[in-house]
Length: 324
Image (cartoon, helix red, strand yellow):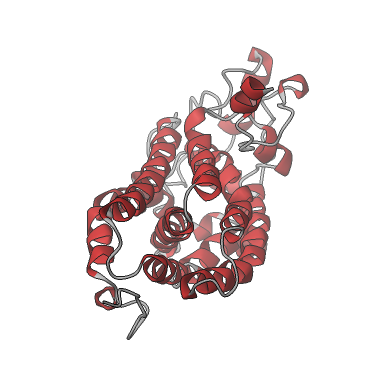
């Protein structure tokens, strides 16, 4: 019996995919909804997200943004030309989009800059484990797992949820209007591109996964894909929970004055003098002024505290030290 899958009909029609794919999507819908409708994104959409939480999100998510082309390159290593229709689809998809994803790092940098975060801080500011978990997982799954599992975990799960939460943030103009008009386009470019660009990508990834595994994969293969998708989404939620927990101000409209703001959520390793300087620079501003003036917040990490590798570099340092 021929178990190969060849899509018939609209790529975005879930009914056009095998039963096991539809069951996988249903099984992971709950955690996907938790990510897409996370309070952090709802508050960002409504322009009520705390400044410290905003900074934690932009800095903590940077490792995944910056390394995403590398995740895709690891997957590409597994796709040989002419070996199967699924691998050919994967090669075309990955080669076409690696350059696009690389450009998205520039757009994230512009978004961060509009919020007062420089590239040096993106790369070297101390970041907690929840901020690195997703990047480390994506690197591991793309390096060590089969092609179908890697594509499902990254290009389907991460890109799919990202496109949806970007659409949520862009569904109102409140957040966009926080930025001065002269910087608004650059500040919002990453969000707007992903609200549109990732609309088709996860469906292309889903077709690749289904084509690679066919209509009747083994239970073990189905479980591996389902678990990888769920784990990616759970790591996304873990980072979002952590970022929102960094909020030090009550939730308020962005035209309200700030009072009593204590630090930026990354000041535990800093000196008290640096912390007080950062606190003073923010206390004098309303959140709207913070964004519209693009204030460069004093960097809380000292030069000597910078790691030797960029933020979130997935070198699995402990493993290599043990092997050496």
